[in-house]
Image 1: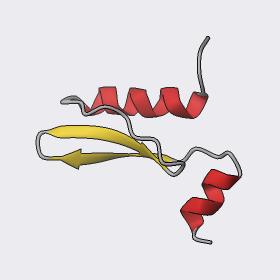
Image 2 (image 1 turned 30 degrees about the horizontal axis):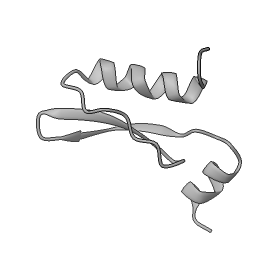
Image 3 (image 1 turned 180 degrees about the horizontal axis):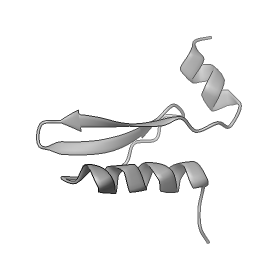
Length: 56
């Protein structure tokens, strides 16, 4: 089992941002991917929101 699978199986969300052309998106070890954003700050906000869990 690799490190990402291990992190996801324990419920830990390890997020990062990835740039693709003019866009940036957040990605998580659990397989989640946020929407493409033009602003890195928004992608980081998406990642933080995912890591914090749902806000009902």
